[in-house]
Image (cartoon, rainbow, N blue to C red; front, side, top):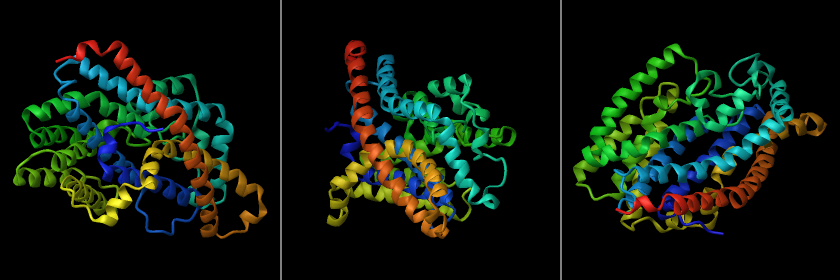
Length: 382
């Protein structure tokens, strides 16, 4: 079953989205398996990549719908919000329900894995499963996606959902942000907004301890950099304008101090996206890369990326039970154990991701379209 979307018009985005989900899964297997022997950068950089992709795709969607859904119309904003809610929420709510219903087993699986490396994990801390409580307040805040606004709830389900609150916050400001960029210029608004958001985020971080960077002020620059990537690769701009936007985007993704030596990874990813996007627009992508980006494997991995991102943690927890109840697995070296874990989690997460995409995500997308057509179509005629 196929769903026509803006993302399908940009093959290189499919490649990066597939890479990001696989990257997160692999890094988490090494972290929880107790062996990080591959030189794979932090999983948080992969999440930043998702933000670049989101900014790109939202800009692409807005530009492609300018005539039917002008951003100076309130109804266009409502249609945008409706589409994004039904794209994100259904699959997330299923994951949240599973985490709550299987909370004891889900969290205990991580506790069992931590017990294999007590020195590494210590007691307490951000990733201590024992601090998680699925209280009514916690659940309601996650249903509303407002949990990311408050430090206490920024990582309080043990799902990788802090980035989803970021997404929803970005969606909330995107129509106004994009409208300002179209009217006043991409670079001017990018610099102005980030000159406010980055110092504000740093100041807040000094006084409020967020378990994860779930507040939009901490990460808005990545979404904006994604918008700039779209403008560089897909709009008719003069060469010097594209170059200025490229330097601006590179600067925006170079502010993270927590990555240390890995800081170079973010600009390298962004430059690669710009390069591949430009080649694709000019139909000059090398054949081997074109075949890869347009292959069924990459398209499928891209389609399943959201489901894999949401569900892989359940199978990491399940492996905690497997490894502690199977003497043969306990006898493995950390590297061997991570290898077995990786195979198990990969097979299970992509299987679950397929089921989630087919039976939850696609129906959710269709439901969003139905509501837009049924209740919000009338006011969108220019």
